[in-house]
Length: 100
Image 1 (cartoon, rainbow, N blue to C red):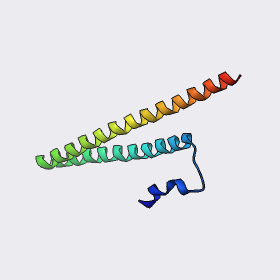
Image 2 (tube, helix red, strand yellow; image 1 turned 90 degrees about the vertical axis):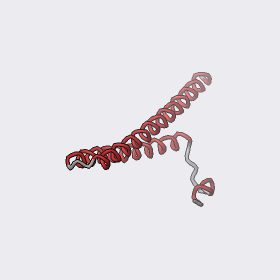
Image 3 (cartoon, rainbow, N blue to C red; image 1 turned 60 degrees about the vertical axis):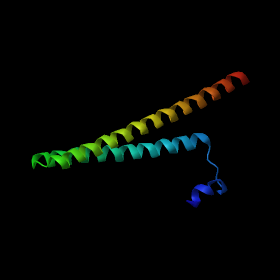
């Protein structure tokens, strides 16, 4: 909690591109975790279906759908970050072009 409050007090200051890269790495990690959770829920639903436990299988599929929604949100966040990186690159290229 305090790390978020006093993050600016660190001696190191990361550039915006480094922060974007770090955010992308974190989102990639979260994406792999969610994909693993989705596959686990599918397997559990299959197991419950084999033993004819319909309610438990439906609950697994509901959790799977929830995880898929979170995965979509992560992908939209990733798209936004990629867009920000592209905009920064375009601005940098335009500034180099203008300075020439």
